[in-house]
Image (cartoon, rainbow, N blue to C red; front, side):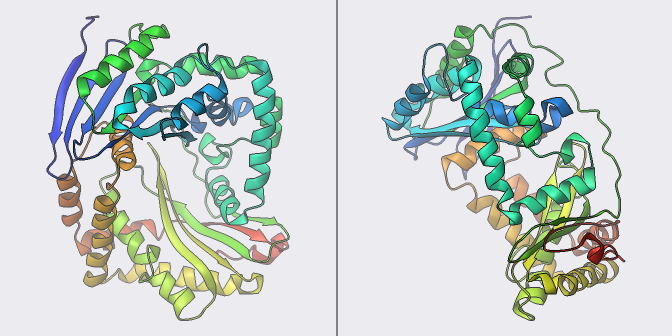
Length: 439
């Protein structure tokens, strides 16, 4: 394999800056957006490994790693990692998702070399000391307990499990108390060295920067860690685990809560589906804001809930659509009836042209307003490369949203909202109370 890096200019966006992409011989992809008018830079390493890549015995290991990589490297202690970034007024953090993990820092432009060195160091040369494994095990168990004390969040996990069952997508990103308690340092270290390969990673940076210098600094950091071998073709493998088809599940988790929390929904579309823009508009019409149908029906007109919204989640080969509401336990059946009736009405009769235009306007506003800082621009680069294998300009995204017609939204509604629904509820219920809630 040739030792030269391959660089190309992807865009000169009038609403942003110059976007360049370099692929190193080891498969590492580096994307930057140069925005000279900004005085900050956001830098991130995106790893194409998440909770759906775990076996049942390793459930939660990706999230465990997210914690452990900040605990120390061959050159830095945990205190060094945080103190060096904070000493220049920067911030660093990470998050784990179903299909990827991201480690990032945001600093003043002059401090970008430090951010690159620190973030690349913790991603590539973590020592994963046994003592740190035990310390973070306790921290993660506390995090799981904290999550379980937030039923408005927990119900989404219950819903996902109701739809996907024991498929990796149905498991919690954090793992369970049992799986985290059982994970050994050897298992975590093995997962780290097998999966955290350059060809499974994307480096993204946005702000006042020089692309060539970013490439040099990143390459030096990966070379220092010895991660300069040719790309492993298995690192970017396609996910072939078949997504199960579970329909009509009702899962009730009895818990002493003041409110009942429910999610009603179904399988949706994968992230690169042709209908994704129409789905976005439909979601806004149904429950994407204060003018949405469900918000108006459930909160404004009847006062049955404080929080009610619809949502979509997209993965590489599947997706979810759902409606969340938090209400008094005695109002659950009424809220469910209204929600089901509204979804059925939209599936059968569609939505109005005016609603579609409003939904599209919300989509376009979210795109443009969401790119007002370097962090969101860095995320756009990382996700575009890692998840979509393409980077759409702002103008191209707006064009695709504009191409959505009312008829396209009505067709999506007729398909999506007629699918078998599953229901998750957390509250003080006997499971039999809602056994017939789906009709």
